[in-house]
Image (cartoon, rainbow, N blue to C red):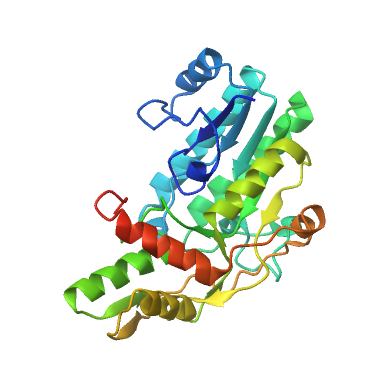
Length: 299
């Protein structure tokens, strides 16, 4: 199987085995002709679409239009190129940002289109929602085997550690590292009271490979572990593991949604024996990788 992995050097893409992981310079996802040519030249027969313009709450809020346009364009191009070239299977990544701010918990796929996403990242959320719409429409009209997955908050090596655009865990790791180096406070964005489900990137990579080979349902598959943890607890874990002994302070401007527990019952029914990486182990691996690769990480 010749599988194109978009975003192949990123957080999840780097954990998936494939000989076809072009960089953004090698394959411009904003240009459908480039994608069609790449598929044809390399005899691609399946795609795992991980690539996205993405960031944390601050980046999402500051770049609403940019995030919407870039993600919509990439997604439309990848799926349309796959349709035109007769690709056998596409697995596309959505996000828990697709769920409406007024959703009931746990989050279920039936709620995806039942209201506007949270105001802090509604543009990104809508763009990701359209992946499900396009995949379903292409399945119904053209018979394309396009499926979608909804992972919760992914973290691990090869993440984006840029303080302005990173997600929670890489941002906290980088902040704690700098606080220790400079003997300053370790600042957490928000109140620390929000809870999230975090999943280690290698776990997502394994499940995604399984989905590519085995899952053919039109319904999106939620990928999440069984437990939530507060941002305060995550920050404390990171501080302890990085041997930071200073003060942890909270910038209480905004938190995003306070809770986003999701329904992983379908995942557990089809992969009942899968064991998620414990948060403590995943954090230690992420911290070790960040320190060892500090000079070349995305920051």
